[in-house]
Amino acid sequence: MLNIFVCVKQVPDTETKVIPNSDGTFIETSSIKWIMNPYDEFAVEQALLIKASNAGATVTVVRVGGSKDTEALRTALAMGADEAILVEAGDNLDSYMIAKAIKGAIDKSGKKPDLVFAGKQAIDDDCLQVPQLLAQMLDMPSVSVVVGFEMNGTKLNLKREIEGGSLEVYEVDGPVLVACNKGLNTPRYASLPGIMKAKKKPMAQHSLADVGVTDADRRVKYSGFTLPPEKPAGKKFEAMEEGQRAGVVKDVVGLLRNEAKVI
Amino acid sequence: MSKVLVLAEIQGDDVKSVAYEILGKLAGQSIDVAAIGSIPAAAAEKLAKHGAENIHSLKGDKLDHYTPEGWSNALKNFMSDKGYDYVFSGATATGKDLIPRLAGMFDAGMASEVVNFTFDGGTFAGTRPLFAGKCLAKVEIQGPKPHFVTVRPNALGMPTSENAKAGATNEASVDAGTIRAFVKEIVKGASEKLDLTEANVIVSGGRAMKNAENFKILNELADVIGATVGASRAAVDSGFAPHAMQVGQTGKTVSPSLYIACGISGAIQHLAGMRTSKVIVAINTDPDAPIFTKADYGIVGDLFEIVPLMTKEFKALLG
Image 1: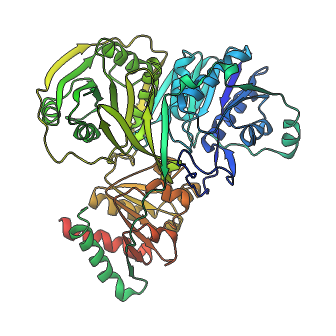
Image 2: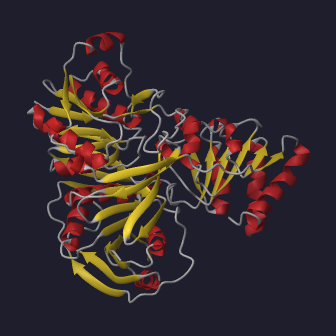
Image 3: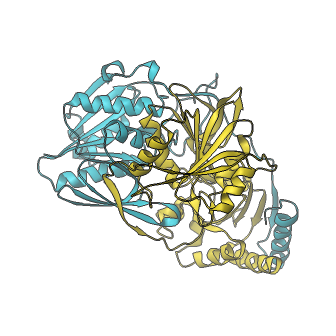
């Protein structure tokens, strides 16, 4: 019986215009449309693919965050996950607290994880820490930025993308945490019956204290959220007509050399 | 003054340049450099010039190629009696995977991918982009030491002055411990060029490229100016380019000296991934495309006409 855990995070939609809040301690969250972190969709899908070919396998999705909106967990359940665990917390925990809370939630579930999936990074804080930290806390190996996954019994063959599109091919026998990248699979859409069924699936709720996380676990402190400085307006050249092109290109190449000094 | 370890990555007969960028910013602290493998003599000399007091080449079985467990075990083993306050690394493919695991071994905090930092009274404070660069925030680390920091390549810039220190070289043998996930094989990518996240010049194509074959003209331009080729999400989702080439919030965040956007309209999520580029050139037929608001030099024109002309012009300029 395979116990599969999937870590999901809820993040602002990629089209969100991000605005710092009034005291600069975080961003304005009142009008944000929340979605499941895009990389986590690949993690959920991979877990479901394994479940489909392993009778008795269960997929548990875990999320740490605000409880007002549980879009990410509901999406995962509607896609086909069996159960969900929500650890209620603010939206601006650091990676260490999140990893520790997920570890606590997994321990509390009483199931020993055989496989843990996560997205390779969350597109809100872009820290890329939770998968590796969690693996360390669970005393598991981890492979990140995974774009290829093969499973033969307990043996896994994982392809990790590194620089320039090169791949490291990992072999693991036994429990492992897999942090997924785009390209690993094609995440399914939640079907209407899936969405209906999801409403009846169990969702455990814990507080941070329940899973052993306190303020003393905070390792990283953020302040002074600001918008990046606006660039001054650049130079624009009209080159739709054939007669303009060569001159414009010559000018721009000259500017890159002599004004911007980047070539 | 803090005691700082900078982890370098050996690349050919040098180390990745982000190590020098970090050293330049650490003047005033007591700095050691370590790398897994043999640090080439020429690199050691340069590291000393930029402030390294001790330079450690770490060697041991099963460390020839990176594995998260092997390298983190080895570094923990090496660091155990050194009393470092801070450990710095580049936010490279290896650094991004290795450092959080290593930080976890010390129950310590980590600031990811900072683009700037200061040491006030020996205490680190960094600046890092969040939401793919849509905003910036100050980041500080607390709790048990050492504190860990990764730095985005190209963000700090190379040091402009020297800070020569002894640079004593040392070889240490380290233990890789138990490796459960091991690398069986490395499949080389088609591109021998620098990865997008480390590239100094990038030429990117968008939906207007129309198909994968047309990326040929971007490759030709890239070859002339030593650039790495990227793509927008629209181009990747349309199958013109693999995801490894995607620049943006759900791809790679880049900060090259020069970014040339060809036929990219400039969706928020793309702009977020490339707006910290030092100089941006945009080529687009739509004069109202949002990309022009971020461009230092905008060319309203057809990329299929402009790009080949540009290649020719750069070829003439650079010989």
